Image (cartoon, rainbow, N blue to C red; front, top):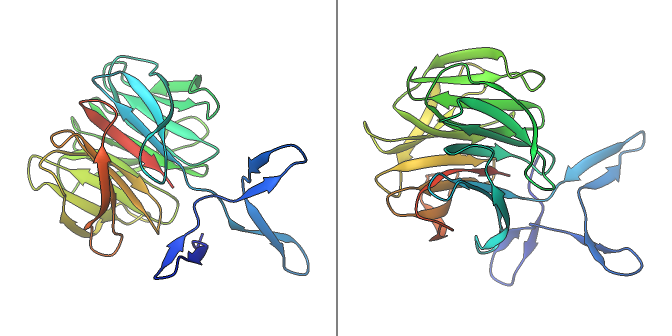
Length: 250
């Protein structure tokens, strides 16, 4: 979905949130729609960042504006390695439990879970309609079913997969050990479309959509917004804890 933008006096910037007055307080809108003459068509939905840390064993929602913590909760198991999704879904994986999860967007509790298709779960993301998953043991990337987490398709990873996310239209992959790169993969066949150098030596989580890349690195202990055009750093901040392992959202 294209981004909605506003002019800040010097440049066009994405609108991250819209609020409406509900009669007693300002409430964040979940989506924006227009009437095309026959039906309501969604033209905007808010942005969100989901993040996890394997040292703290926590799941976070981070602020779009400055990466500060909005809220957090304990992860369902002891080695949270991947998280992603959108405003309606959170997909999560854990290396020790060897499971992939759907978590509640309201309190991060487990909605459902299943065993991963390959061990050493290193990344998961997607949106309401798709799940992208990667595993270091198999050195593969996967599309999983949103209904039962079964494998829809898989392919060899272009490098050591350490974080994966995106949406139905784009896939972002973090890779370290071999190249320290961020890749764009094709949703059609999971092949590499292009790549660039990662901002740190141990890239982990990667997620976002066509307009934004969220990324984290466990050596620099930072979270990043990267440019979708050349993978350069748009901005960064210290991660909430000392071993950031997964990030996603839209």
